[in-house]
Image (cartoon, rainbow, N blue to C red; front, side, top):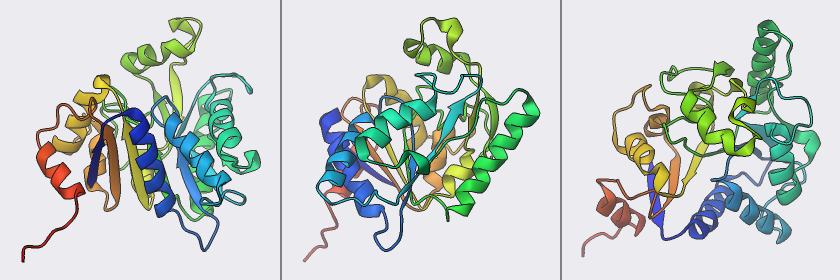
Length: 261
């Protein structure tokens, strides 16, 4: 795991976009794993600039969503399909027909379980995710894998925690409008991506970031599974990195390998 710390959220967006572009394949159509939320918005804008400049191939790329709310009607402004169409397809240039999001509109649990299975199968059919973009919840959730999620879990239906619903209430007219359930890629599904790039900014994420990067590998902090991945890059601003105990080492490591002599 590589931890890169830069001064501001704008710097996080710049650096994370560079990491993503460098990690995506150029010899075949890339598959990009997409997170929602405020953390990756700057990153997506930078990817749009890279695509416009010809540094990122998006014409035949595919995008795979991490998760989706259950129970929001098609076209709802806060459904993650709508959000990703607005924030990724329209910004980066990804073809909407190649954006794959779990279907959270099923009428019953059986239909939702089938939708989760189809999303997992779609990822396999695409050949797997090349780079999975991630944020982190204030309670350490990854995707919508809340504390207590199995570390080997696959795409499934989950209940959202009260903390997550409260954090997301700002996007809805009232707290009661926030969905109670979701379909989310599991932690095992996320770990199947070839590369992971997590971005976090702001002091509100500092406790979760420290637990994920320096605490034990535990279901109590789902984002700690990043420690288990062979190619994970974490890009933080100063506020999000404020509680890291090993900050000096991360900075030295990011400066590069300098052998004595």
